[in-house]
Image (tube, rainbow, N blue to C red; front, side):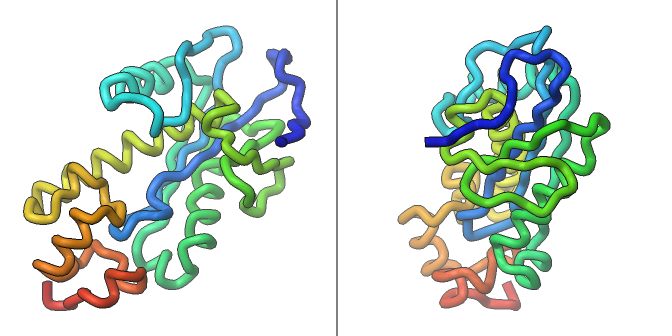
Length: 201
């Protein structure tokens, strides 16, 4: 059970929720978001982005951007994933999302069990994207952003089905890797991509 340390009813205590999307995929950057919600301008229906329909997710994405006190995206690109490993690259992307906020939060709540190194009090919350509205909002911003990137990649490589699987290691994705090899956007050091990576593709 998560033992949260913040006063949930305060209108002056600024909480930033942070989540990532793309850590478990085989292709592209890892994308993170940090969000500070406005307690005087609530958003109804926030939840883990994976539990929402695409239509509802997009609606909340627009509402979050409109109503939040501030929000910011962070990312780590392929070369950073190769150099740092996926965990450290994810922590770097989270740092970028948080430090880019124009309001400094009093507390940062991170989805999961690891926290990036920050000068602000930080707490990890397991399943936070379902439990903490700020993290739910961050998960929505990050997912819509990265999903759009996968849809754009699908236009370049329609044979891989990126618009459907969003880069995750589904059976469909693995079949396409076997059939066509890997694109330059695949994470060549990830299994099973390394088996199929062709630098000439």
